[in-house]
Each structure stands twice: as structure tokens, then as C-alpha cells.
Amino acid sequence: MNTDSINFLRAWLSNPRRVSAVAPSSPALARRMVAEVSAATGPVIELGPGTGAFTRALLDRGLEQAQLTLIESDPEFARILALRYPGMRILAMDATELRRRALYAGTKAGATISGLPLLSMPQRKIYVILLGAFANMQAAGAYYQFTYGLGCPVPRPILERLGLNAVRIGFTAANLPPAAVYRVTRRQPSGAGHRLWDR
Image 1: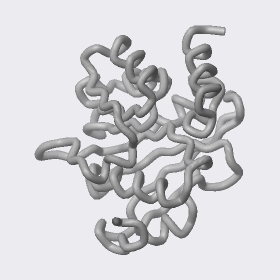
Image 2: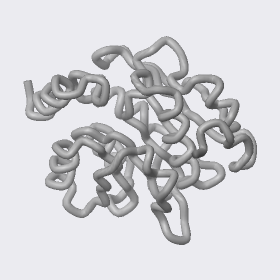
Image 3: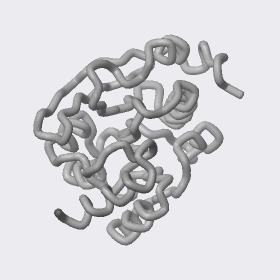
Image 4: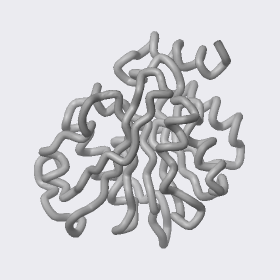
């Protein structure tokens, strides 16, 4: 077992609802998650990067460290990421805080890559996370989310209220457990329908 796997297992034992996985995402899943992202996408937000499996894949796609903003609530994972990527912007905070922060001055992200365990979260929290992510993305920006479940990890009522579409764009059995990848995008101007859990 490598160091990243040990760190993930330790974090899972400490708080299984927050981490949800007992091992880092596989290289196969990481490649599927970032397949539509490149340096031309613009800034990228990564939610719940853990030990950096998707971060490495983003760098392999040609993005520079300065293009990435990592949002990690686990202090140990944030420390590991800071040591591994000393030039990268790493914010040690919960993803729900995104709706109260403007991550970029004069520009917005082109994509969000999410390693968050949405299936273990209450719907209100999922809503607030997506609200914040899309507030920090360009109108054409896409939110990428993987899931171990059989369907889209973003509940339909949330997609409807935020005016979003979700499409499954990939699946890999070469992950423990097997995982599907979804792309979530706007289908109407932002600001419409944000009434349910805005306060």
C-alpha cells in the first residue's frame, strides 16, 4: 500500500462520511474526469482534491499550477497538497463557502473538477456547493463529478432549481469501486430559480 492509500484510509477511518472512499481515485478515473479540460479551458477549480489524483491528471493535460485553485477541507490533505505543489493556490475551506467568495478577479473558471462525495451529503449542502461553483464559473463552464452510484449524483430537484443539465460522459471499471463521470452545465441564465436554500 502506497503513502497516498494510507493517508486516504486514515482519513476515511477518521470521518467516513466526509471522505467516503478508502483509496485515492485511480489514474483511469482521473483521466476520464479531466478528458474535456485543457490549458485553453482557463482557470480550473478542484473541489476535494484529496492527495491530488485529479490534480496530477490536470497538469498532465497541460494546465499550469497557476491555473488551478484547490479547495480542500481536510487539514491533512491540504498539508500534503501544499508540500506536493508549493506553487499552487490551495484554500483550506469547505466547498460550501464558495458561494460567499469570488475566487478570481476579472475572470472566472472554465471548469470545476469535483472529488466530493455527493452521495453522502444532504441535498441542501449539494445545492449550496453547486451554487458556489457555478457562481465562480463562466457561463459556458462545466462541473465534472464522478459517482459510485447508478445514476446522477446531483438530485433532479437541484438540477431543476439551478437550471442545470447533467450528462454521463464516461465510466471506468478500473477504479475501486467502478465509477461513472457526469458533466453538469447551465441550461438557462444564472440567477434563475435560486430560491430553495439560498439563505
